[in-house]
Length: 431
Image (spheres, rainbow, N blue to C red):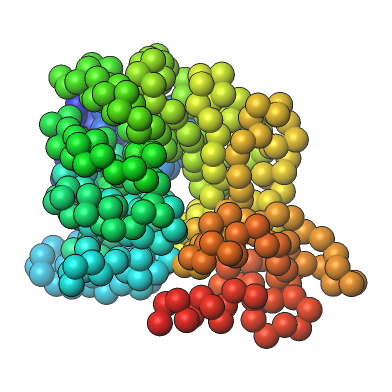
């Protein structure tokens, strides 16, 4: 299939879009002016159920919805567009709205290391064993998810992470022997041509870094453009590169984003998964739990079962981050845990590799382990799956039970404690 991209400028050319009313199309234009909007012909033609598009999870995952903006912001942008206001005025108002949507969630700026007297804006190093690398050529996606926590990468230059110098990455890895994993992220690195993958991967292989054990690739491409691994012009070259890296003793792990089981059911995605596994690539899956998309135990159980049947390892269930359209997608922590537990109970042990529900917040990945009662007080039981300080990992701790909480900031320590156990050390680390 030939790739065709749709954005705010040409989405009215999508044949199926004529099903929408003019008002519905205008909503896409208003919200898409604030939050990034892009999709492609694979999503449009093979994933969306256009007979029920208003409730279709894949449509909502790709096409902006009115309630993704607060009412005042929507009215303001709608008025500017209807009045054909000058572009500069629209952009100024849109930037104000974007800055109110927490474009830098979980303190990502604080993860950027200073090395050899330079701030490495294309690297994040939050956890001891893993470093994130943002290749310049991979800072877009085949299609944008409306829940994306990195939406500011595409909308606000002030919050963009990117780097193209592989030698700096190599020197940083050699200087930090505790690092075992490099995660290529974005955007979506899989939008890159294979020649760029070769530049980065060959540099890592040739550097012969003893501590480097795993190269991870964070990508939504299996769900949104599986042809990247099957029929794209350089798909075979990419798989051969993966084989080469594997033969040199470095594991390749594809961190795939599957938000709904429908993304696993086309012939194209099944072929892509099969080819990747044949090339020695390990595929792990992750997704946030999202209201209006997958906030159902049955959907999650089906998702995990489909993945395992195809050779994919369920890895993480996340809580939607506190950024962008969080209010539209948010599920309470109580309900997220209940959905996780009920889905977990439906599947066999081979599916139970998944960890969650997990909040990727500034201190680390905090898992909601359950709701319990301790000394007569109802509490959330929490645990660090990853932490800025590795000593925090695996230590259960407790928060007051709040059935409406949707993020760590909504929680208070239980038992009249003034702080969670990690907070003092956390603020010292940030300082």
